[in-house]
Length: 514
Ligand SMILES: Nc1ncnc2c1ncn2[C@@H]1O[C@H](COP(=O)(O)OP(=O)(O)OP(=O)(O)O)[C@@H](O)[C@H]1O
Image (cartoon, rainbow, N blue to C red):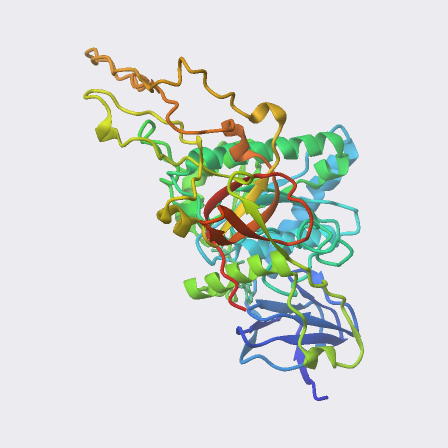
């Protein structure tokens, strides 16, 4: 079989963009090259799946063999690799110092921020891989706060993971390696211990900021617990990938605090005690953060790599669908052409055997966070208003046609339930009607926010709100709703009983189009 041989000069990266119908394998013929700071093994075919857009960087004069050249590829010496390396060396010193004092000192806590397609995930992955390749046994925590490019789970989720080996770039589904919950754990990319939380939407919004903050706080608690138990994890520090929405100063700004700027960014900084912020290619954000934050937090600017691709919405949708598919089915097989390549090949994940089954509406309790489905405010007595908790849970009733349409193809996060999570059924006395506390007339000069309160038990809210920010046990998709027999058909990645019968729905949907 014919291969294309490519020479790459030192300090140069060979950039490629694979389309939906392209895949390739690369092999190092001479020299040393890496992909997202993972050194490619010598003389071994390294398969790269469709839709991947990335670059192979040469540390010294190198030659690689490519099974089939993609339509779009070029070499460039204008990379930000040297700046990433300098940053890594500074972080490495901090880790070594933290390990040396061994009094629970936590290593560097780095947050990456920047606009859409600025290269945040790529820089985060490079920094993680550089730490993992340092030979010091670091286990840097990856804080995946971008629900649209989820670190190791599926769109809509945010996660903490502790990789212990350099993360490969075989495909776009799991930029930070996949968790053993979705893929067989004996495989290379699957062996990354991960804890996930379900936001349910691919962009944080001001409306959803209350639940977002709860989720981030729960993640922070979990990380602190881990650091207290594991001094190496503590010394390794963390690298946080964030959503591009974080560059919007008014994200999370509520009416009760109109002057708050970068509310969700500040909350994440506080929760994870971030002490280094790397702003990619956004001068205004750098200046804003320098003004807002104390000098103990370093705000650095990293130039955007010329190789970063400005992905459009169609590409993002394709990647999201691919990520969900990989969660249920594992990676698609490598084409026969790549399998037929002679020589050693990097092992890749096995497929999964997803399982479809039916479950009754009464058995699977589907909840939504922060939704109102009680009487409209116009139906309340004059002068009173409804005040619902923004993180309240409502049970989805699939019986109405509108609900059926909304639920079909919805991705559900299965969450763990504890015995004391259930709200006791109201007694017959207080079940009679909602108690509306009328708004007292405003006193002059009284700008209090709390005057409107009500106690409402109109809705069947079976669980405490905490369930909404519980860790996720796994994901399923509703593939069919049988209104006659009152049953859902669910797709699950593996056969067996669901770990819990309480699930949270969001706005993430998936239809298997393959
Ligand atoms: N040097 C490079 N050469 C080729 N492709 C690259 C390079 N750096 C990044 N890319 C690609 O550019 C795209 C955008 O990069 P990345 O996902 O890191 O940006 P982001 O800021 O995290 O994006 P988002 O706005 O989706 O959060 C990705 O497809 C990535 O693989």
